[in-house]
Length: 134
Image (cartoon, rainbow, N blue to C red; front, side):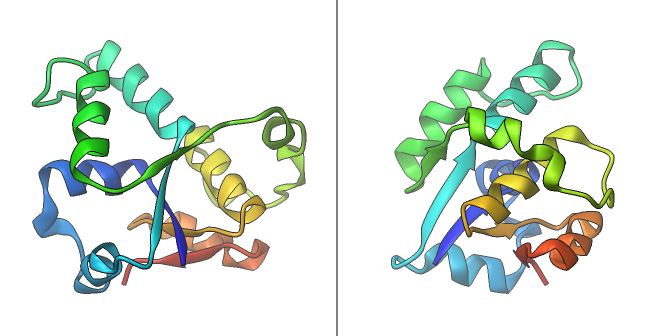
């Protein structure tokens, strides 16, 4: 299967693995699965880091992602023009965070299962989102 990691999920993989559910750990350990990180998560982490809302053990967000992709098999999902032009089609507003809403849209559009612990995001199953956490 193909999975999109929510921003907090990839931070937990990097720093707080004890917060991951047993189901998610099993998914992450399955070598047949493919994992993606959205460019939206990279953008979100950079913004939060630059305004002091997020501290990282590494010196910069680039260091975090360089290390993450070295030790964890994953690839990046670009934010493309099609994603942004058709974002209006995500009609429900279960979540106010624009980063999360765009990642939900990307997961739906790319037929990815979203790994998140955010209960608001779980509500997007009514729009066709596949989500796993608990």
